[in-house]
Length: 268
Image (cartoon, rainbow, N blue to C red; front, top):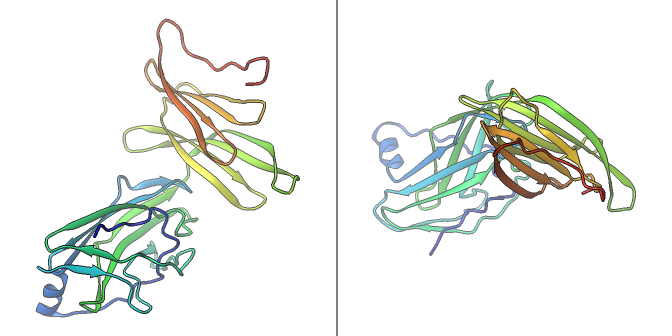
């Protein structure tokens, strides 16, 4: 049986109960299932996808079936703020298909936790992944990993209109942000409806050389076109819709003259 995690798990359990096991009992229990959690980096811009990679290793020496048991969901995350406040999931009611892990086998999946938890405050968070085994009657948790939510530096913003579902116009606020990571500066774009408090997307568009501003244009449909200097003599062009969808992306190299954006007579 092949195990599958959904990349869009609809909410995960509130706080996994802490179980205290002492002495050799604790050591023996932890040897049954090992849970590891990893992130590619520590710093994230508000609302951007935060991909958690979870690996579950079956060290019990026998086949292991992971499945929900009453109120206990077999997989979930625990997230706390720096001062120890629990961050509850957006939707605590969810269903997960059972997962079979053979003896000595591992399964590893990537989960975007941004749509699952309301990580709206700037600052550090501690994240653990937890797996419940009904056979052992307990949770197995990863070591906590730290991430931090921050905000980039706004370098361009525009408010545009778009027809709504009921025919009434809606407003979209488009913001370009630059954010300095450990070794590079990255360009981000955020599309949101501030009146409704809805964020459609926060995309990282790639490396960005800060000595030159990106070229930004709106076409006749108010779709966004961005040309950024991603490296010396290298450029990245991105086309985005107003629902936050990436409609196209292409890299260019400078050969004689610098590429530029230009609007055609028909507005494209």
